[in-house]
Amino acid sequence: MKEFYTWKKYRCAYEFYPQKEGNCSTIPLLLLHPIGVGLSKNFWHRFCSLWQEQSLLNPIYSPDLLGCGESDMPSVAYYPMDWAEQLQYFLEKVVQRPVILVVQGALFPVAVSLVKLQQESSLIDGLILSGPPQLELMTKADSFVSQKLRWNLFYSPIGKVFYRYARSRKFLDSFSKKQ
Image 1 (tube, rainbow, N blue to C red):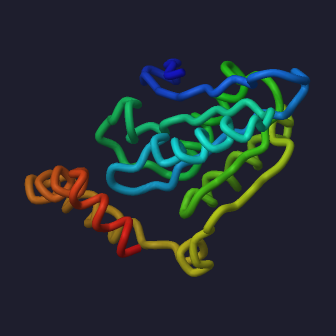
Image 2 (tube, rainbow, N blue to C red):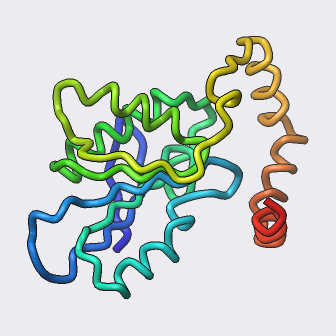
């Protein structure tokens, strides 16, 4: 079931797959989609369908991060701590109990940042990393100038045309098969 919440001034989307039956104390899963053009909570749809078909008991929360899917898309650069703070708010205000965090791809730094925020609330009961990125990608810091240049390129008219193309079903299907 698709739902929304407001974080800061932004509208954020998520899907909730309730527990079908059984013990209400089963720990929910919080699924973090990979990051990239056109990626969102939809990445997890097959997983969620199979989970429910198998009658597994854990409820599932699958949010769209800010700038992805059906959440607001402000024109700002996003950093792991931004999304971690969004998810911390989501845990505190929406989920309101500990979860098992399932992280896909390059969002590993977001998961680490979120775990760091848990010193007071303890809302992460477990962490599952699915396809974490290469160590170099996580440890090599780009210079501010390099980040700014990339941001300006992708925020230009050329970048907007590329982004529109990269969000197309044809591109996403082709990219997913090749990668």
